[in-house]
Figure (tube, rainbow, N blue to C red):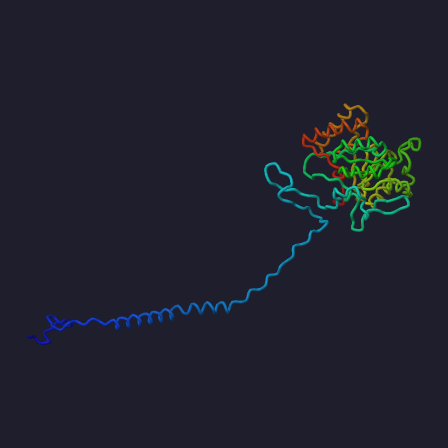
Length: 376
């Protein structure tokens, strides 16, 4: 038998003693110990995530309350235009923009035939137009509606309404809403016809008789305002005329060849109209008229006719004048024509409007083409 000194290190070669396997308890104990060591090591390296999360939430500042800003209330009258998208009507080429008028002081269609009590001054002659306490003018409130789109625009003013009952009804029934009606203070049932015209969508002006050349042999009618009276600020005749009607945007000169050419007369008249919030429409019967420059200097709304449509009662001649009005409008962008409420004039104008609208021309109330220094 060899001695232990001759045995390789760690080996029991040829030994008859059996090898011992580790017990189950020993293996389990080692596994538990390994898990505990691994857990301790992970905790030491990473920390305690659950507690760290709780600590971070506890240390985070509490959320501050958010201030809620109330939406601004709609202002009744804004000096800036309102842009609306999409447009109320399709725009060629797709969706675009529509710019509305800056001030929406115009009467709603349902009440357009009713006078605004804030725009009436009681007088010995009857109700007179006046600016409202809030600055509104009859020119703003009683203005007729227009689309406000760029393009060629024409205003047609048909005067002499109220004198003939059948002629007045004929004009209301046949002429579209864009046509402006001029009422004569010498007419009958003016309040009734005013309401009918306003319900139909028409804008109104009141014809004011002014002193012509050759007065009094040439007489415009009752309550003619003379040069002498206006120069002396005697406006009884004017006030008697203004009180015959309500719901109109301004006055239109009737005759007045001498009156409109006299600075001493036209200046005080325009000042009185401006005080009352009215427009002055010059029928352009006199080339000497100073009304345009006077209105510009005094900041009063002003418009002037480019031509008279029905110089004769010949339908062909009326048609030629209307075609000339269209040529002026296409060259200048806008044009104003005046006519009288004769049956042939109304019939010819109504037929022509249907044609010219098909050529892209818009018929608008005369106030839409007026020069308004206040810009409303």
